[in-house]
Image (cartoon, rainbow, N blue to C red; front, side, top):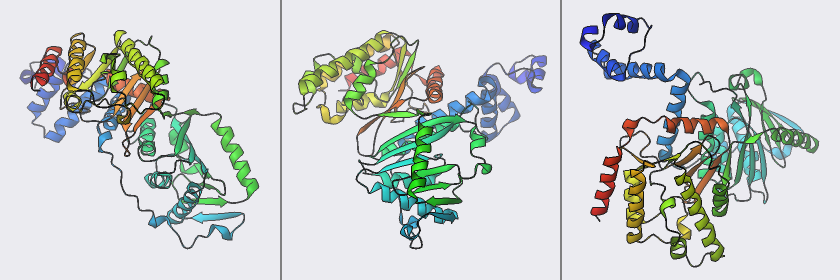
Length: 459
């Protein structure tokens, strides 16, 4: 093996005995060739090498982030069948104090019943103390809150207090974010997730008994994390006590994400960004071209029927200037794809602005923006992913620095959803992943410029 791989015999001995790491992935590939490994065995060996180089926690956290980004475009709205959760055997008006509920089916009936009832109220308010691990429960929550603009949901979630990967190789905090994303993708309710920190293994222990809680205007229900049993309360004094406890707990929490619910809030967010950050990363299929948009464009392309259009034009201009300042800091790395460029040239649409507020950019102006983009690529501000890069086909937009960040995506209703990332471990996970992308995943600068120029010639 040493002779085949071109390695000194003593060094190979140390590698085999775990006293030295292979010097490169190429050497690992040669070892795999010599041992005639199957494709599966080769992947396992290469993964083991990668884990050794990057560390167990870092490797699986980055793998989780990659899966989160690359699979984001695959999440489609599914028709939720609520019929299994209706129960003719449960009549909540028949008891006046408490009701013990045993069994997952009966508990799901009760949960759906009290949540659905609250969602139908004019100003419904649901308070949750529950981990989003259960797909059944999150399906129920998404189902009852869909199209309910007047419904408010406060959701307290326990996040892991360490960076340790769980036994099933998950970044637990990122997994929680993934579970609650559909609440923004399909629902119109006012949903706000809050977090506190604890050891997640202890929190999810079977010994935690009735650690989950739902409170509505008429009911409170405590139940086990595994959804096996619970107790339903109707007493007004008991409800008031639970509400008081919940509000005290919420006061000790912080938001996980905060929905940026209007274009003006979006502009305000960027105006408050700290441009002194050492580095930042922006990822989206279509390149972030706002820094290259001339200040004359808002007046030209914003629709004439916008309310208070004059001030809106001023706000958009300030937004463009703010984006330009980010570009001038030379510390932000803008990552985009060839498919995103093609889409921009074909449609004249910008993913950062709602389609409803502006008309498509004329092709001659698209060319002007493209030329500015080519110049930015030559200055190494913008880099283009290869089509086979793991995240190249994602429709998720990300901007992240050490202290700030947001996720941007289009909901099932075609509205833009901005989620301001508030939680430090999530910021770190996205920042670490984007900063660690291997150079082999990107086109070299000269090749990027050549591709962009060829795209312009084809039109």
